Amino acid sequence: MTFEKILVPLDGSPFAEAALPKAVELIRHNGRATLILLRAAEATTCLGADPTDAQVRIVHEAEEYLETVAARLRENGIFKVKTSVWYGAPGWAILEAARMTNPDLIMMGTHGRTGIGRLIVGSVAESVLRGTRTPLFLIRVDGTRLETPLGQTPAREPEAANV
Image 1 (cartoon, rainbow, N blue to C red):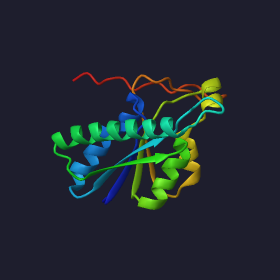
Image 2: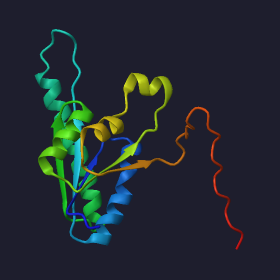
Image 3: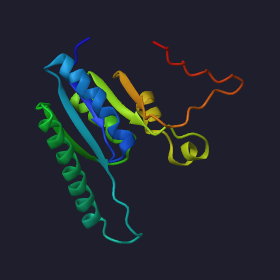
Image 4: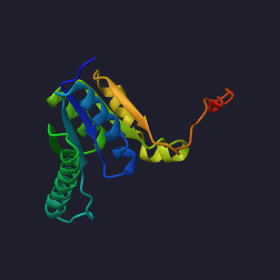
């Protein structure tokens, strides 16, 4: 399978950036794919305050962050990199960016939140999965807790072979 465009949403966290090495691997394998780095930006302000300055600041910070990541990728030989900041909630921004850019793949890291954390914060990955037909490649960060479905016994991790 070849890819022309891979969309990688980033939020500034190591969890989100965990998708970058796999995206780079796919691009190196393909050779001609464009990597689209996306950041959703949303300002919070006090009730009654003018949100304009906060909105401009948060978008500017998102642009700087994405340019820093893009520069790092270019230093490592990935030259077809575009950056895009969308103002709004992360799930909505990813879905809209995917609709507008028509990527072949959305690749994103997942925090692996469970329980009350997922209930309160929600799952951006799940909202993207439910809102797009674009293939979604989720990267689970090493060290995040695995959760077994109710009523099932946890699978054992494969043991390393003695060679």
